[in-house]
Amino acid sequence: MDDVCFSFSFIRQHLMDSQNSSNVLRVLVFPWVAHGHITPYLELCKKLSKRKIYIYFCSTPANLVPVREKLKETDFIPSNSIELVELHLPSLPDLPPHHHTTNGLPLHLQDTLLRAFDMSSPSFYNILCTLKPDLLISDFLQPWAPALALSLNIPTVLFLVVGTISNYFLVNSLKGSGATVFPLRCNHIPDHQTTEGLAFGDRILQCLERSSALMFVKSLREIEGKYIDELSVLTSKKIVPVGPLVQDPSGEGENAEISEWLNKKEPSSVVFVSFGSEYYLSKEEREELAHGLLQSKVNFIWVLRFPKEEKINIKEALPEGFLEMVGERGLLVEDWAPQKRILAHPSVGGFVSHCGWGSVTESMTFGVPIIGMPMRIDQPLHARLVEEVGVGMEIKKEESTGRFGRKEIAKVINEVVLAKDGERMRKKAKEMSSCVRDGGDRWINEAIDELINLHGKITKTIVEAT
View 1 (cartoon, one colour):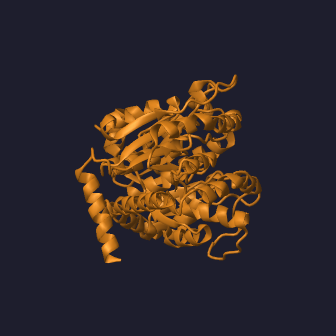
View 2 (view 1 turned 90 degrees about the vertical axis):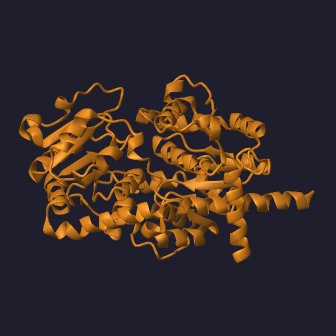
View 3 (view 1 turned 30 degrees about the horizontal axis):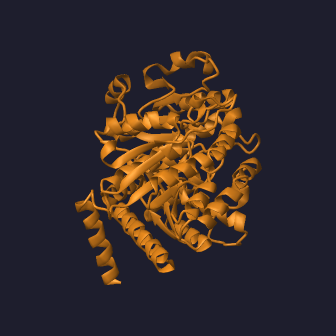
């Protein structure tokens, strides 16, 4: 075992010392076209490329425009180690090229986008044939990608960017294994969300069957150790957590108004309220949240987003008189805010979140307790994991209506941010942040070792077969 470990370390160092060597791994990276997938895939690529692994990052032109800008913002030179590869989806009458991404996509076009994505498989095959990468790192919504790669003797590493807890739940449900480690019953997730998740069941099962025995997850053992181990047993794969993959806040755009407002507030006195880039609150949800924030008496920054096709201004979207009642206690931002910069600010002491996995890992990275308002699919599971780890609380829905109510919203915000009973939670969030930061390069080094090992095994198999 020591010889093997030495060999991996030696090869990794050799790769780092010889970028132009023929031994440098060339990896094609292919995420699903959602912002919440593109971002962690890009962060992984940046870390791998710094170890002299050459990256081909493949997505639609609509996604590659902001990717190119992100690489520039971080003083990263993509021509040296990351090459952007355009995947052109077929032209459909109701899906113009600017909608070849989930960012800003109207809800009624989501199925159309997935269909167009599937129709792009011949184009992706041509990319594989042209680039001839050593390995493919791919998402779970495109089972045709590992199948095409396998036909060319290119192994695929699945990289899952949602919580391992939700992946375990999904695979366990699909396989009907009857495993008992999972702490939640299915009725914690509404029926329509279970159905929605299982609609992708064939996709994830086919991806598992067609990919290699190595899988990456956007997580760390300190958060999801038991779920990582159980998912490994269920899938018969070695699962390597690659860390939270949160972009450095300095690489994110700055908003002078937000910074000035935060600088005037006391430490840990502000809650940040945001529900991600792809969920839009209903009128009723906005009203209950607005009244909950008013009743809580804490300072807040609230990011409000509306579908692009709906022309709504902030004042009309909120209860009458809300802005006047809030005054200097609240700051409302439309569409976008520098989330990581805000979470990293010392004035922020809580995060009202939908518990998308990206937001959960960002909150843990910056040591901000989470106030969970999960909306759909895997988010209820992430909210319960947050409570299990001890870094936040979930706002419970009213039993009579099945909806979030203003009183409970205010109560949980106050408990997390102000109450003495929340001190343990706030301390745990800071400890988790230290744990994340102390991880450093450990996760990426292990991932590189496993990629090198996988490539070596495949190469040996091909040579022996010939």
